[in-house]
Image 1 (cartoon, rainbow, N blue to C red):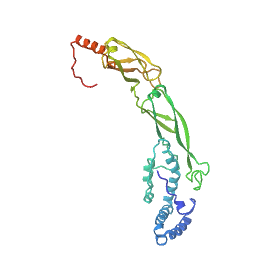
Image 2: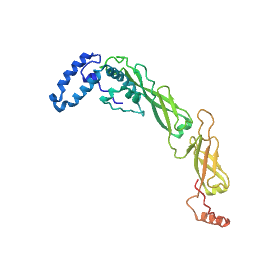
Image 3: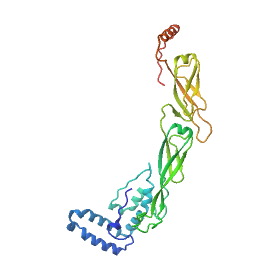
Image 4: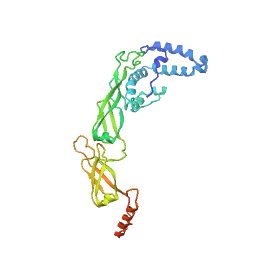
Length: 310
């Protein structure tokens, strides 16, 4: 939302000026900046002068304009801050013939600016890792808190603190606790000041399915055939040993109970689901070739079935 033009400044009068003073100043400036006198250089100034007088000379339009100036600071400040929505609005002189339409667009309906507007709560987004989901984290958030100007209370257009708008935005900093097990897309309330939307970044080793962690586990063919153990690195903490049963086929899913993510607000945890992918040890030796040839000759099954992708 662009700041409304300061029509009082354009007409070189105080915002408490009466109708006679406004009219007198208008006639003086109109003569000074009329294109016949100032030439092309004064056209824009002359246009602004007439626009300002059109509003300030009409009691109803002036009252609406004054309320709009006072409400501007709060409306603008609530849409600013790190990552918050920013709204722009183009002003034109014709708008002052229909203030109701402007207020509907900007404030979702006609409102009396003498009454406080319901707080529009800004929303910011934070991106966290899957490790932070597992153990929780704290993030910093800064929002603009709109307060009444204690210097002039909106009664002085030359106020160095608020410019006569009556309100100022003061930054407030919060440490927001993101709980363990928070879901991707979850929205956390920061009191009455803001909402914080959580995005969980993709992980190189795991995918999340609810409270479960899903991954692929590489297992050497001899280990899958004869059974054995492999060391894995979980999401957090030191490596653990996983038993591989005999005759484990490619695609078999091994479930590790309680090694998933915590359920938000509870002490239970999900599981880790590891899908086995077989691979041959490398490099191959001549002895390996001999053993695998013997194994092939020992089995008549050659495969060849076609299955749909998983």
